Length: 153
Image 1 (cartoon, rainbow, N blue to C red):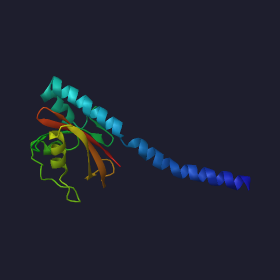
Image 2: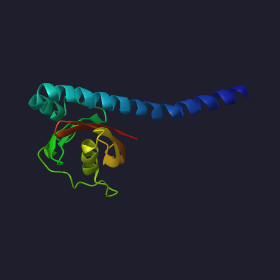
Image 3: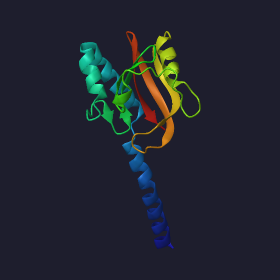
Image 4: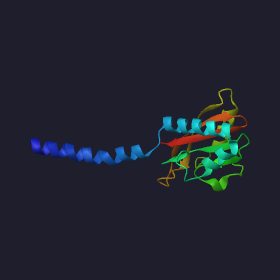
């Protein structure tokens, strides 16, 4: 009986490992906020260098696992994007997620608010899994732009 119990417990532990490994492969909210703050510091020092570093998908400082930085002006024009540099220069204010949520508009509204920072929930393709997942994007206003990153849930 004791052997059966031990074997059962071991089996349950093995089943839990893939979930634990997957959660370790996902970025956390503290990491997303830290990445945004690091990007803001670089942008304040040298905007052009910051935008180039953020849009370089090989740059691990601004692109780590499923975390990446994005920068938009307050009118919705993408200034830098760590996962899809092809959208730089495009106005995405009217971009909606699969539920019709205008997430860039909501982020811009939040950036224009007195707080100037916070979280916006939406659905977005995860660059690691390629599946559309729930995401919380964190943004902070810097001058006439917003710098953000997000976590997949």
